[in-house]
Image (cartoon, rainbow, N blue to C red):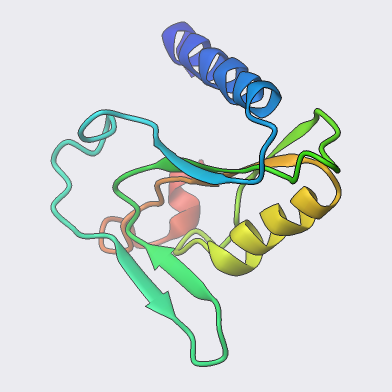
Length: 135
């Protein structure tokens, strides 16, 4: 990660933590991490896809607009601490409800502010093997 990217991430984390201190009310807010397309995705032409399951829950694929959704606890239980939640999904999707929103709501019950990160994934059509992007 370049120094300028590290600085941007550090500033984002400071802003997110500051929000957790100055907004101690029960609320939910989504923050877009980039104006327009995120660096590295300028030429992407695929669309984000959200799938819901009959029993509940949803996943998202082809994330092109990375966001952070802030979940604030009730002020009566707020403890002043925050956690960033990065939902999993085996390199192909994000379990935004089961491993994102549900975890954030549980953390809220414990008094934590939770920030759920919806991050970009590789495009399944771009790589033969998802592990190749890690090497």
